[in-house]
Amino acid sequence: MSRTFHIVNGPNLNLLGKREPEKYGHASFEEYLESLRVEFSDERIECFQSNVEGELINYLQSVGFESAGIVLNAGGYTHTSVALRDAVAAIDSPVVEVHITNIHAREEFRHVSLLSPVCRAVICGLGLEGYSAAVRALLRG
Image (cartoon, rainbow, N blue to C red):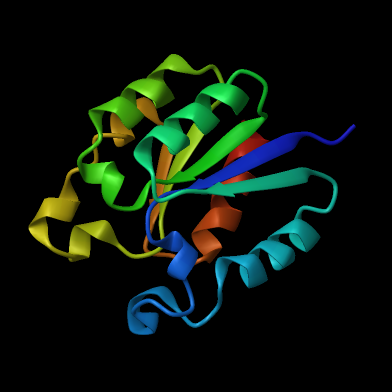
């Protein structure tokens, strides 16, 4: 029986492949998602992206009590959203925080994550491969 894992992407991640390719690469997330689904073909991978904080919170609340695990790249909300942090803390499903770039090697305001204390793990700086690492971590429990 396959498990369902949810990838939740926040603001501006819909622009992957177009936005600052020197930092974020040339592939769109949709292109990468196909390879992720092949890699984890025994599992179900669902994906949701929104630029709207409340929609991210609503989605986490809707899947966060049944998901085998959630991979969350909250983008800029990582550093600003107490409400998103509270949503992660409120759900039962384990959450792995992912960042494509190394947030600790960037602007100082990106060094603090409000989400990290309520996530099972944090992966940053591996590019899109961070999503795969997050799913592997969730599979190991």
